[in-house]
Length: 560
Image 1 (spheres, one colour):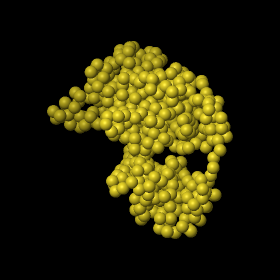
Image 2 (tube, rainbow, N blue to C red; image 1 turned 90 degrees about the vertical axis):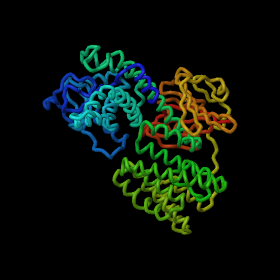
Image 3 (cartoon, one colour; image 1 turned 60 degrees about the vertical axis):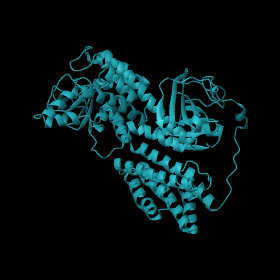
Image 4 (cartoon, helix red, strand yellow; image 1 turned 90 degrees about the horizontal axis):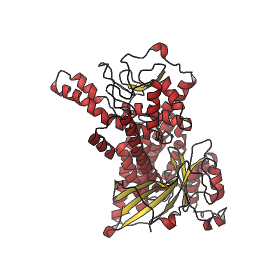
């Protein structure tokens, strides 16, 4: 995002998928794709809410709002009309996001990418609202009789360059976070909309068509990079590089905030703290991906752990500020407080806040069950093992809680169940993607010149075309005396028609097929788009229910 803005200013390229606010109507604040008229919506042209088109578009809109998860502001109404005036828009005065039927029809012509195109278009307009892009114009209007107001009014046109760029970029990530694939055909969508509406290449107060298409392409490139950084954060979680994952989540948070990403950053801070100094709690907290005691490492590590846990609590507080009904953050705050042995506050958040939030938003019902696991752990810390044993046994049997079962095993000091791979020959079959053996070729693969300094001595590299249907993501960390260690991920994209050594194929195999061939994963993590499963050298990205299809898979190599 940062580099894209510099390029835009340097080359005087303006706007992106949507355009500047409609200045033909001074009393309104409207961001529109292509405003032909300052008139309001003709009520006779409103498409009813029970129509098929409206229902599909509104469903996408609701997913976008839920993915943003920011309840600090009222949610704009969603409307659809038969007008042919604005294509799509955000109206601050009416507090509504709208799309015209013709624009909807254009999006539907993109076949398998139709919903992604619609999500990108609507998400762009919705981002204008959440990013407060109307503030300068509104301020200038209120102080128009003063020199400062007049100056700000003159700056509105230039300010729109950054507003539209950000809305395209943030709207794209919002669509991705809502479960839609990154839409890379923005230039084609813009061209199709111009053609369908009979718009000339040059419109008053809008950039020429060719400039808008170039900006679409550049925004898609920068968006894909942010998605790659986010995916790298998720995979670093899986392989146990928690402190590094914190920095990657923080990088994403610079550009995009949501309760989920704030929560993820907080979880990583907790895991990082427990990883460096886990001796204060010997049980698996519900946020835990994998718990292994490594013993006390001294006062310095203890202080660092406490600092990380308090940092995690600040992330959880930020998440619940954005969305007071986000139960996972209350649950995870209880876990962090338990790790700090702050028993009274941990009990409060596990017994009151987390269950109440889960009741207000039932999609987080599991948080209420996991909160009972935290309460059982707190009983163990207090010395009431009998009550904890009974609670954990009930949760593992009646609620089918795996983390409760694991804590019951730890409490009763039972051995870890032995695991026998269902495919013992798999270890002798090399895994490749696009005929690339990552382990053998790791030192010879090339990266794009564009690299990102993530923070904490970390640098991110990528190659989005390392193979015909794969990309390469790498996290490099500086070590003592100038040395650097790399963690590499080779990812088969959604179009890859190949298969793993054990025959797993994208969109043809599901999670049951994976566990049948590879056994239970070493770790798993929930994501905005499903679940990620970790094995010795392979990672599987599983889609959402009900199908749980394999969306892609990756190979990884840890630092030497």
